[in-house]
Image 1 (cartoon, rainbow, N blue to C red):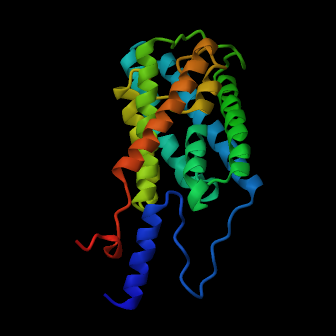
Image 2 (cartoon, helix red, strand yellow):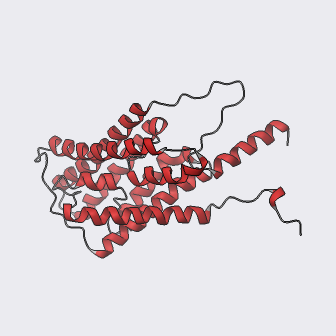
Image 3 (cartoon, helix red, strand yellow):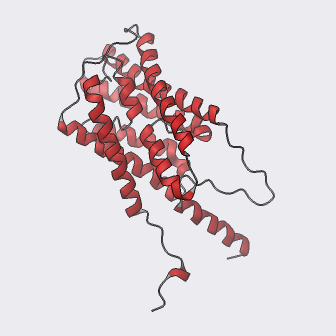
Length: 266
């Protein structure tokens, strides 16, 4: 291996070890510009609003086209998969395309030591932007389909098995995102994350909200995708538990290996 190849190999290993670490520019090149915080906040607000509009709007459309609940869920999940993938591809370079307080808080937590990732001031801006975007997205979807702009959902989702589903859905999402970061494969995030959410619609009992902001937004619409306000707090609590479980799995599965110099000599 040449000196140049060794240097590139070392950089790849460093990026794989630290979630959220961006590859370093080659010597002599211009470092990439970091978007200003207002642009990042706008990307998170608009992205989360668009995501909720897709989820709620496709749910309304599905219920108007068919009475078959299975087909309704299929239409809803399919629209979400394609929409989420597009949003991550479009806005990922600006803000990271979190659209999710659980992801933002998890990245902040893991970045405390490495210094690479969302800072506390950024997280303090991201989370309110995501919540505001989610509410705006639900109102927009209702407006597009002639529904009351704000009508609290009556769809109770307080059963224990649904809460377990949220733990599983969120843990899997965090494991996926931070596993991709640890292995330097975040370029696959648009396809991988969208595919996971589409699958989790079907394999979790809760249909995989896995997102505190989206959960809040969906309480504002009494339609197919809604959740009763009384169920929101428990859902968010389980999503945060799932985030902790997911980070624990990341630490266990993607534990950094030791270099040759660190190996015991016997």
